[in-house]
Length: 189
Image: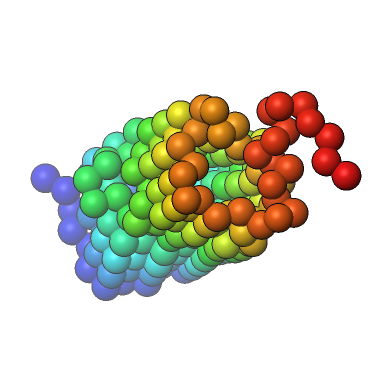
């Protein structure tokens, strides 16, 4: 049975490998906490806020994120692909998600704002209708993803192969169109 924690604030806590196992947090706030050593097992976050937290290389397999907000957090090399997919809703603002894995996730209810998404694996993910607002998508992988109606206008450095990714009605800036043609080895001047 998971321990239930409601409406608590945690400040500058450094969590160990098993500290969060079998716990459910609802309406909690985490400020400047370090989760990098964690191996989350049977952990749930509902309506939680994380501010300036470190998740770099944390193991978040089978974690449940239900309406969770991350502000100025770091997630380098974190694999989200094994998170519980039911009611999966996360929002990132001013975050670093470089080399994270979002493989085959349904991200339609998620937001990415002013974030670094360098080499993020979005393969087979559903990002349809999603707004990538001012994000760096350098080397992000969208093969076999559904990016229909996604808005990439304010983001940069993406290279999306339209032959391998569904992009019908997606929105791109004129400057960013070269990221759609890169796979064809065309030169645009």
